Amino acid sequence: MEWQALTLSLAVATRSVLFSLPLAVAVAWLLTRGRFAGRALLDAFVHLPLVLPPVAVGYLLLVLFGSRGLVGGWLDEQFGLRLVFTRSGAALATAVMSFPLMVRAIRVSLEHVDAGLEAAARTLGAGPLDAFLSVTLPLLLPGVLAGLVTAFAASLGEFGAVITFVSNIPGETRTLPLALYTALQTPGGDAVAARLAALSFALGFTGLLAAELLARRFRARLGR
Image (tube, rainbow, N blue to C red):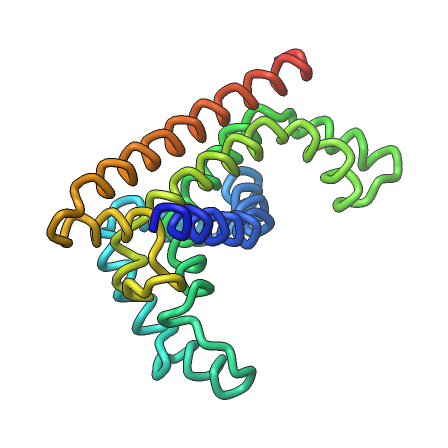
């Protein structure tokens, strides 16, 4: 049980952060550098999963992406893509829950990047995208990596949104937290639960420590 839950959790978390990363960078840039009506609303919407009960987020995903949901029904009909009760759905649920953490880390890093550097690159002939890729993005790396690792660690521990949206299916959606929950509900499962809890603790602690060390290392390289 432990090995299967671990490999599934790692696969789900990896898909989650890879899917979220480009969007998180774009949203962080909009919230930091953008000047448009509704920015406060966008900020609140992005960070909403931090204050909503995870079960409520899972329910909203079920309404939107379920087989009869507004988006899920269309995806199933047009592309044969089903998210509910699948590991792809588990990745979506963990991505939604961990997305604000990634955005916050990237945003904090971006706030310390001098916008004048981009402007200088533009005056030298670089386009907006070239200036971002060649100047801003390298300076953002500490925040990007910290956000990536933190979101990955958070994805490994997500429970409420996952079990509500994709249920607890062995080998398909039963990640580490769900396996721990199952072990606790199983007579004689205390030993398995203890091992799963210790594994979850070790993964979470390692992820947070790695995020901090990576951020410090890149800040030192950039002289910040």
